[in-house]
Amino acid sequence: MPRKPIPIPHQIDYLSILDENAELDTSLEPKLSKEELLTMYRYMLLARRGDERMLLMQRQGRMGTFPQSSGHEAVSMGSVFNINKNDWHVPAYREYAGCLYRGWKLENFFLYWNGFEEGARMPEGVNDLPFCVPIASQLLHAAGIGMAMNIRKEKQVVLTYFGDGASSEGDCHEALNFASVFQAPVVFICLNNQYAISVPVHKQMRNETIAQRAIAYGMPGIRCDGNDVLAVYVATKEAVERARNGGGPSLIEAVTYRLTPHTTADDPKKYRSDAEHQKWFLREPLGRFRKYLFNKKVLTEAEDARIEAEIDAEIKAAMQAVEQLTKTDEYANPLNMFDYLYHDIPPSLQAQRDELAKHLESKNAAKKASKSSGKSKQAH
Image (cartoon, rainbow, N blue to C red; front, side, top):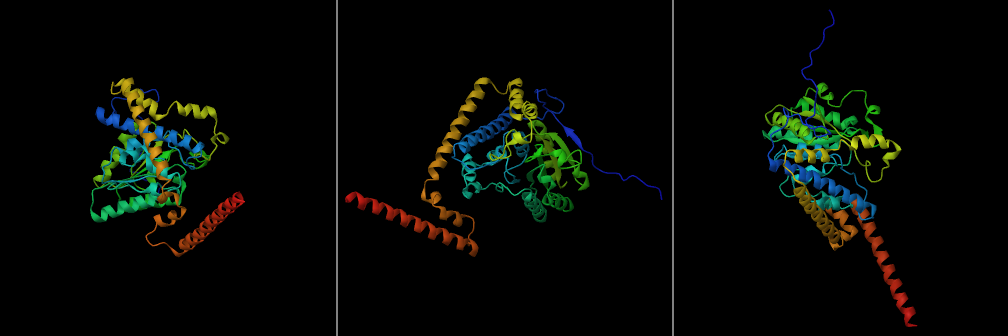
């Protein structure tokens, strides 16, 4: 029999609406109100300024190591703007803008990256999962939630996020496959920020795009400009509507760039050039969106300054609140870290807790003895 080509039902498009010079394709521009555009801008700006302030705090020894989100605001905010409160939001760890929009507080981030698991406590009534640091494991959670929605015949949608490095993990492929087989209403969003820590995309995979993997899993896929919040919004809107109407999962590859180190413990100068960074910095999402809003007369210089001042005050208040909170007995006592996560503490952790309690007790006893000895010497 002759060889025959197999027709593949999906194709991969690339979507860009607002380029790095804020030039607009009006035929693709989404219909968003002034209030909606300003809301998107405010949360993108809040995420950026909060990220910058956390870096300063980390350098001052007031916060632990954390992954920055600067440069990723358009992916997070453009996508999350399409889902409802009762939909599910399953982040990785750079989705600050979307989390803030969903109802998280800045205090959550300040606490969590200072080593307090209480920072991962979700706001009441919000269907979000906590940040997920183990790479790609959250995608399986998202697929499971989507499968459960189908069983319950619920018309909700799941948004979940992962990086280009995570796309090479087995968990990622298993989640995509399960979601496709069971037609789970999950929108998978890949933040392709060019590097899996220090490994560039071209050394991670042979395929031209990550989005084309959607074809192998029998789902729609699209690649978009991840620094263009309008393109991300439109791409996600299509995927969310399809999922909500029973059309199953989608894969969106948002091409962006990590303006910062992978985490505050990383030195990107060892694996990427200043010229490359500068090229991508000119494409960053916040500046081009601000220019777009100015061009549409949605935002003025005075309004922008007012928003900046409000955000600055909000960040300072959150910092002060958290630093006061961490001095209270509930947070300052290291034994409490064993009590937060489990209702019934496992025996292995109970043993560690007992060992630490004994160590702290002996340490406190030694301090008291030292003070008592000092007072006795002074008396003589």
